[in-house]
Length: 189
Image 1: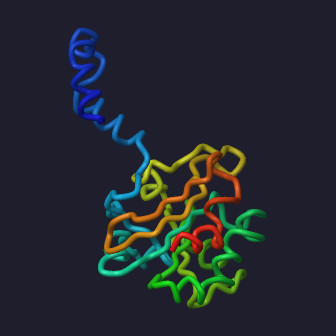
Image 2 (image 1 turned 120 degrees about the vertical axis):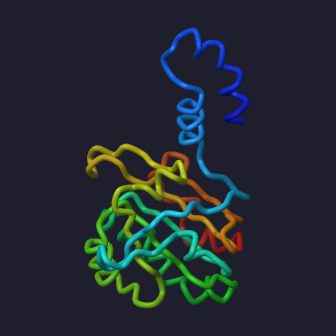
């Protein structure tokens, strides 16, 4: 679709001289959100320290992974509802064939590690930091939340099977607590 739109706009752009076709194609592609059937992007996330990188594509290779994202660690909705739901349901989720449960937030790995300890995630949920929001942007699921420091992830859950997205639940407003909660995600497994 992005290619068709770019081709359609080529005559206008060449007259205007304000952008190249490749720039427009990248801009349109970046603005589009990932969808069921797409491959998970290959982006490095971080666990516990900046020295411990975890590639998103490698993480999902050859297994079924449930990834959910939150706008911010230690925020009320994330700490009281979203993360605790996945921690308490981890055994039931894994019994349905999920090999790993991963929480992602645009934050630093030290904060994500401390939040995991605070929430007693243990071996149930891996806490991965998207330090610059590169993973979030590659998914097209970023939002600007100035009150939380700017670029943040929309709240979502997804199931990835051998690198391919098979389920995606994005909160309509990016922040709410409904379709991406553990119970709702688990019901679709």
